[in-house]
Amino acid sequence: MKPVRWGVLGNAKFARDHMAPAIHMAENAELVALATSKPGTATGWDFHPGLKQMSYDDLLADPSIDAVYIPLPNHIHVEWTLKAVAAGKHVLTEKPISMTADEIAQLIAARDKSGLLVAEAYMIVHHPQWIRARELVQGGAIGKLKHIDAFFSYNNEDEPENIRNRPETGGGGIRDIGVYTYGSARFVSGAEAEDLSCRMIRENGVDVWAQVDAIMAGPLGRATYTAMTSMRLQNRQEVTFHGDKGLLKVANGPFNANLFAEARIELHVGQTVTSERWPAANHYKLQVENFGRSIRTGAAYPCPLEFTVGTQRMIDKAFEVARDISL
Image (cartoon, rainbow, N blue to C red; front, side, top):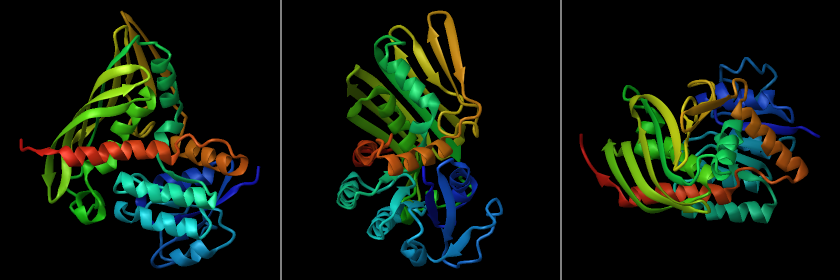
């Protein structure tokens, strides 16, 4: 299979540390170019000494580049995704791909008109721990699903210039990590949120603590749901799917697998606990390989924009109904 030739739009630390190395390692991909505001000045890309540095416009105009990865600040994701599609590139844009669900309609229309692959870089659905979690829950391993709870927190209080702490760049905890707590529940259960409420603490115009409660309704029935996100708490990541016969914990490294902790799930049924581990799986690399496979073979992409818009609707609703509190 012919490798997909990739360019990265933006010298973001996350791209440099995670996604660019994943593209470099992926079996069906070739990392060829980096776009920066000052071409030739980007550092820290020593893992790929042959990488070309160029301007944003030059990268999009380069006919040798098949696909682009966009790790730019949240508020300009839609703008640059549409520019890349107009330039004839397949596009993988960092989450959240848009600021509102309505904006995703533009991206779906551009995708369908162009015939190009356009997707949000929602990497966890490519990881075998989440695929296995979905198989177990939807296969009845915990009986009837009755409750889901999810928690994702970190503390960046000492980084006021971080784009996540700035309202003008689309910052805030929900847009950064609510994508995971909300989307993972949807992916595993196949359900959508109803009757959603939200309590929120804001600083400088961005949410730094938020608790969402909802009913998740879908093919497995109805279950209660609680999700916590915070940018002001000690690191914590876990998701639990609780049924009437057992529970499934994705609690070791559910969102930053093998970085936060080793990827593992635990199935609790009665007094019996069984676990499965994936110490070597790299969901960024798997994401790139699945993206390339879809481009080259037409295989269905595991995380289409139609899935993405459902999570974005939850994000939009959380802000719409949020009740500000203080602690």
